[in-house]
Length: 393
Image (cartoon, rainbow, N blue to C red; front, side, top):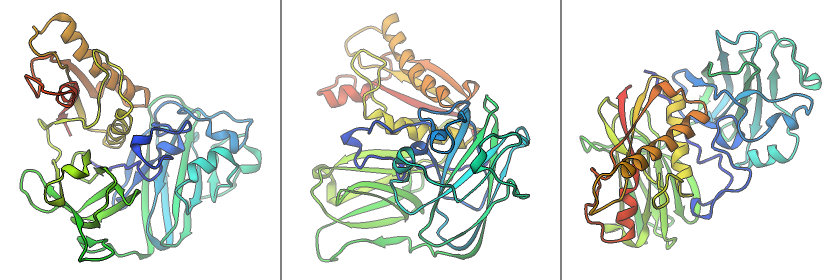
């Protein structure tokens, strides 16, 4: 299985999850703000088209006379000084696939793109395209290469007028000087004698260090991405710290911590290896009381799951729903609510292009509550959850 993980934290248009979404935010990989982020360039990425144009009409700023039908956005940060070579392949869509490559040095590219015309660095259009001023006569129609420097960020928009869930393969070649990865232990403290926060990443089963992608929000109110096994940061008083990791061979991890509740100023991120039979709670996929409606905090977590499913085509899962109903029988209504919560996650994924055949749903009602006798709302909320069982990878 080709496992490629996507991180959307560097392309979202809001600084803190707790502050909510801006109006132009979208979960869809068909929109710039939902772009799939690639970290691993050693292997090709197989990405499934969502079958729609997402929530934002991206072609308005390219040519208002053309209509967006079925598209994918990908964010690339090759950290290369030289030539970045990209091959875009789809046997199913050979004569009906266009791409646009944009260079972006700022994190607000998507917001700027949505508000203004930004000329693509290069582009190739499918046969018969009527884009006019943004056409191209390149012979290497699906093998672009672009000169990049270490700080360059690239956005790629791949489009087809064919509806449905076809796939596209992206292959990468880095020709030049690749920026060296920092040491596994990374120290970002301004003063090593001051109070600090230690974040360490370990394999949950073995306890061994894992070199992983880490995103953290709440350190000096900045949202940033890192690569390593251990990290040291200046201790701050931001209240909440959000940590996320999408790492090859492991299931996506995301969790919010209260800074004043951390023991020994340590955050231990335990990653679980992908394998059939693994069952995990979907962190922060929370629901309103007696409802299958998502709480706002669920949206970033749903995006994590969407990226995971979109980029791991062979993974099949069972969504398992649970409710908070202590001291009650497991009635038909209770079981139905737990199943409806699974269906809410299922519908979100399917709406954004995930094949429904890759997902099963099962409602357990109140038979598997984490807290049989919840003492507070936090424990009750933890009972209202959806878990994922990996059936095949």
